[in-house]
Image 1 (cartoon, rainbow, N blue to C red):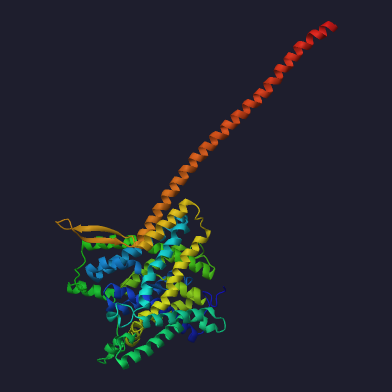
Image 2 (image 1 turned 30 degrees about the vertical axis):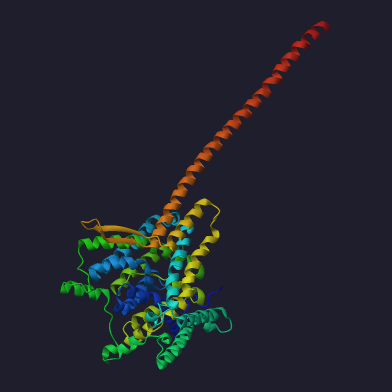
Length: 516
């Protein structure tokens, strides 16, 4: 399908603001979820600021040719849990380790090329890994779709919340599929979120009027708290991003996260062990995102003019910048790629405007609070489409893979089952005197699935080459033997007539003598 806006197209300013807001909303759920999950909900503005800064850094490295947004990565959740034990300094050091993985790989690609990447992680490995990433997020999306402010009373399940989520989902679908109104196709997520929010507002109003908590889908407490004591900070406030908090730790000599200690040598080592393996998974996701983007914009971002080395540098340095000026390591977002694919809007101006918008929004308190009031069920309806796109984009890579071949079958099976089944690797690094493990580094299920897939493919490949060599040797021996047999037959045929001729000459000779 042809793009409505190509990479270097620039929509009119008023339209571009709307398109940029849609990109912001597409990445918002995941970006603000990460600081909440790791126990730093007050750092939501910082995470949004970091996403904007990281995206601009990425765009600069990629010469404004790759239309994708960067946001907080779910892959680093367990890594962040380890780093937080050493405060904000631990978080920054960990993100630097992760970013350096990208930088080192980019340098290797610069000198060696990208062929080794294709051998290490061919489509048979990347495809199911990306599918696992999307499928592993499915639980988050479905969990959100049934959430409301009455969760505590209803075991976390709310039927009205599910209704609002489904309305959001179907409005997004209708806007995307219909062909009559071009603008609706370009902003399906904004319209879908608006519809879901409006329905949730009606139910919440009825619930508040009747005192029925089950109907109160939206929690407006963030807005209420923001204007409880009206000051300048009620309208403008700067995010306390990681760099500021790290400086405070060094000045005061106290960690700014509850229960944390100041960063030391052991903390640096733990951060390295926690972040380095996960960076390889995000690397696989990076390749998949850019292959998907390449198919959408019809320009090869992996092996083409731009090349994987630039996209990796942009992602790695952007992730480090996003953490320093935010709070979480960033990565290219499948949600953003999905937004580009569904709306057919690949305008780099839209992505850049969305990044600026995130930076500005992070300083505007009322808007930050308003975004926090969007119900989880509504965002779940949006994520049902976006996470689905991530999974399907991975499955699409299977189209050229022969699953009838055991090597491919076992590789795909290992990745899918290990990833979806939640196989994680926990490496203990602190054991007390009683032999009980006190601390362990967890390699996530997606990372484990990727590593298992790489090993499985390598083992199968090795065995296949060995078997091929044996078959070739047997075949060569058969050819030599057959040739030898054929030579023997020819020799016999040549020798036999000679004996006959001699015999005939011997019998003919006496006759000739008699005649003479």
